Length: 487
Ligand code: FAD
Image (tube, rainbow, N blue to C red; front, side):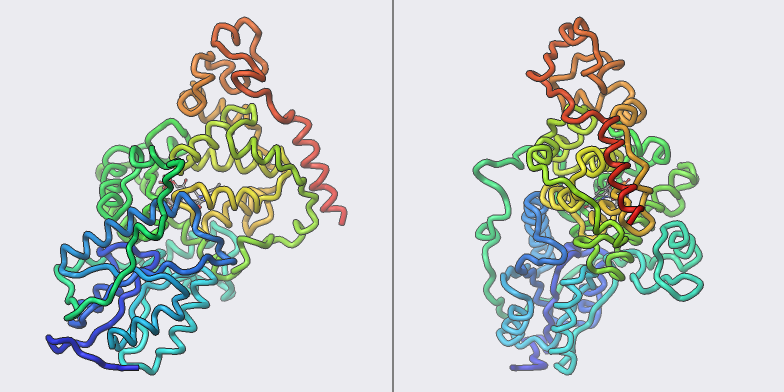
């Protein structure tokens, strides 16, 4: 294998392996390579689907296609390119090293169990080689090993994690994007993104996604600026209202690393002149939830597949494919649940409050294993994230670290009335109920016949009757849980 090969300008060459860091700004691996005067071969590898973190979902595949397109264009503006290769990284990297004579590999670290295992193998294989392997931080605010309890253990509970975070040093300042990237004398071949078939065609269920999203680094920065301008004021209270524009919707950009969490963190610094400190602090606390989820995944790599609390291994989940499908399609007869599931299907996103309500409904009203929900969200969310998705599902199920107690069972009617009091969110995603008065929009099955008729609703025909009685379902869930306790 050739090593320490130099390009015509005399500089050494490295492979810059892009993974969940599809950005030029605050990209430590890229900036370091540029500052060292290296010739850089940027590559993105389509790795085989992984068992422990789960396959790439269809909605995120759509996002990835557009994000790679955007990254490629940005690299070209700086005189570089993005190579695309497919296959196990343990094979693709050595082939590319041999082909280009690169003497090192740089990347930003990832923290999912498969990614770590692969990176370790490559690191071991190349640590003695030329410039070796250099890895950098940047996917989360602090490395998952950095914060420890007073007793030196890993955290299981969010609040002490957050306090330790607050007591720690600030996340590093973001690094500006480089002005130019040194290219090799000759470019190795690249696969064609179109051949990866990441975007759906027949049917094109993502046809409306561009109305809601602009994948890529520029889109991420515009989204951040718009949120600070229009959404951050009132965040603490209004973040729970699904019909209000007071959440950032930055999660899909973060999921593929188009913007670093440190960039977001620092963008909210010094805003207390124009914004309430409570809003800023609360927003930052949510970013820290993301770090906490990675802390959990890092220290409990089976988070997606296994109950954190093994007591839940004996939970008597129902095998109920019909009910599961009604939940997936937004046909449960509970308007807030159906609105959430349809928002997910139509836009690839669901508001956080509604994620909690729909997840609680699947687990506690339908008694379906939380892993079914995790799988569906992973396939349909543009922000699907191995840490946040698994940790959040286990949080709702009660099986996770620092989870909501199982007996906290959301009532989908009162949750709807509390967080969507006028029913605007429901009207948007469940148009067959758009003319229902606010009083009954969250409980059409309790509306008098005349009200239904006036609103053009025929239960069981234009909109489903509830697939379960929430009161009875709640009792059944509690009985199942008590059974666990009796073990
Ligand atoms: P904002 O309110 O603007 O928050 C800013 C950022 O903080 C988010 O972009 C996100 O990165 C982070 N954040 C906010 N809330 C949480 C949280 N509860 N846990 C972890 N990080 C958080 N988030 C994902 O990014 N990917 C997932 O796959 C995912 N699956 C979820 C599944 C369930 C069942 C639940 C209840 C929550 C899930 N979340 C997931 C967490 C949360 O719902 C989303 O991060 C949030 O809705 C994203 O919207 P936003 O960017 O507007 O959030």
